[in-house]
Amino acid sequence: MAHFPARVFSGVQPTGNLHLGNYLGAIVKFVELQRTHECIYCVVDLHAITLPQKPAELKASIREVTAAFIAAGIDPRAHIVFNQSQVAEHAELAWVFNCVARIGWLNRMTQFKEKAGKDKENASVGLYAYPCLMAADILVYRATHVPVGEDQKQHLELSRDIAQKFNLDFSESIAACGHGDAFFPLPEPLIQGPATRVMSLRDGSKKMSKSDPSDYSRINLSDDAETIAQKVRKAKTDPEPLPSEVEGLARRPEAENLVGIFAALNGETKQGVLKSFGGAQFSAFKSAFVDLAVAKLGPIGNEMKRLNADPAYIDNVLRDGADRARGIAQKNMAAVKDILGFVR
Ligand code: TYM
Image (cartoon, rainbow, N blue to C red):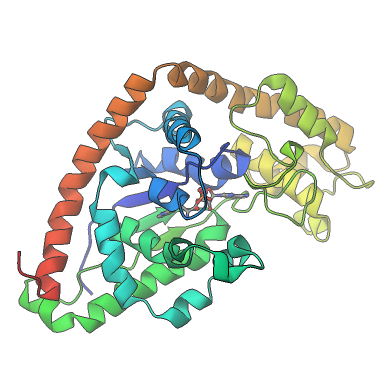
């Protein structure tokens, strides 16, 4: 198969508060990958409108996610940070992919089933076709690596299926247009580390999510030290002390979750955490947890506040990022049009 230069792409929806799950599952990795890869990070506002959004809140949220990226350590000059709706090629390639993907493939998507709920007939067509837009986000840059949390794994597999079917369906034209045996890379999900699926602080069997009605279920990146401390104190645990070995976390979802979060925040493994805290009561562990969480998240929250007070700066970052993203996307989209046989 053709060789594609390494390029990282990922996206975050601007739909309400960013939480510890988004941070540890995705944003921390975004920051790390900057050292080794060319990276494109996108605030996916077109995805946000697959569910109802209030325009003023959406706008604030787009700026807030951008502020969080920068506050967490993403460099928007060395890499690309932008919002999706400013680069029309995402929607354009998504249409092509609507015609490549099969209805049967989309019918298997568990996230659609969760988000549409019982009343599927009343869900938007956009929510159903969402994974095709996601594939377009990645492939319009011919990105090769995609850092995400565990919950996006199925969507990433679909992106690979779409890339592969496009490469096969149009193989002759791809070769005739001078692209060898494949136009799109098969993007590789990067789902690694101790916190790829951060669970609710109130219920270790549920994912930490923006849509949970209880704010105590999650730590938001904008929470202050006192709020973080309160949420950790109230976090559900079990009556046993912490085990000394990772195997001892089996069937203890709340303990496993807190140990995983601690490990990710501290840049170590779960086993490393248990080496320090095996045998400890939760009260002692929670107090170290609060200190660590406040030390790591406090500066990010403060920087987000500072950046949020300067929307003109944020908007400039997004416009500049979009200009550079568009340069790449337009070139690839023109090639796709040639491959498809469109006149341009
Ligand atoms: P979104 O906005 O729901 O979440 C953004 C990122 O955060 C991760 N994440 C979590 N990781 C661990 N534990 C959790 N509890 C948790 N909750 C969220 C998500 O896995 C994600 O990496 N469809 C995507 C956005 C998207 C995208 C893309 C991602 C659109 N186009 C192209 C990658 C590439 C989404 O809704 O993520």
